[in-house]
Amino acid sequence: MVKYTHGHHPSVLAAHAWRTIANSAAYLEPHLTPGASLVDVGSGPGSITLEFARRLGADRVVGLDGAETAVAFARELAEEAGLAVRFEQGDLYALPFDDGSVDIAHAHQVLQHLGDPVGALREMARVVRPGGVVAARDQDAGGVLLHPLSPELARWLELSVSIPLANGGEARAGRRLLQWAHAAGFEEVTATASTWLFTADGDGPWWGGLWAERVVSSSFADDAVRHGLATRDELEAISQAWLAWAAHPDAWMLMPHGEIVARVR
Image (cartoon, rainbow, N blue to C red; front, side, top):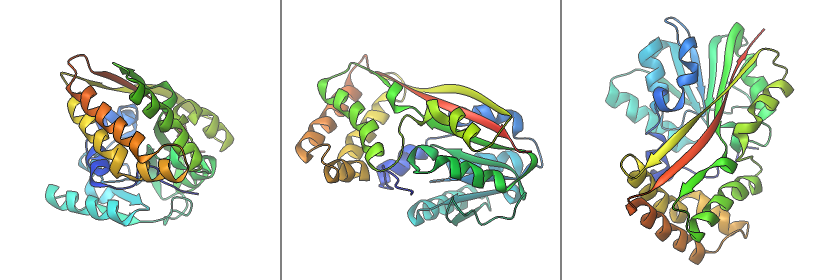
């Protein structure tokens, strides 16, 4: 099962396009060696994928996503950047690549949305040559810290865990990545962690403004109502709370992520 909680509303794609190797894949840096080939599974709007291409070469990188909207966005971004990176629509449980055909299979913020993350890791391992790596990074919504924390934003924290769970995913994926890698049969796994930090004098106002829109306009809102987890009125109140947080001089938010690099034998 693949049910992407946030959907592909423009506000969601804008947030995803902010991601870079530096803020979202630094743990993979040692493996981004010249000549390595990489498939970016769940590539979304392609911002990290294009950075991989700049490091490894456009012909060494392929982005794969299940959403036509995301693939179209990524192709436009690649064209604007002048990078001939291939972006394809496909099923991450049945990757359209031969066994042992790439050096790195990478997934960022993907496993948390899956009903079978272990199966996805095994499929990623299938397409990686012996000696190559499977890499994944996922947030842990159960560990997010927000300040100032209004009652409405406390409800948002609850929904950030309960909505993905209702969709068949696991929003606390960060803490489970090592477990899933072991269950997938990997014997050599390096587990690390890193964070995103949003502050009033940094990206906080931008982030808060995006969430003010996402909480009422993206699939996050539709799923909250469909599962009976929140009302539209409640979501509107949360949206206003995000705007207030974004304008607060003390705004501060920490989002933890788990990371794994698993060697394929």
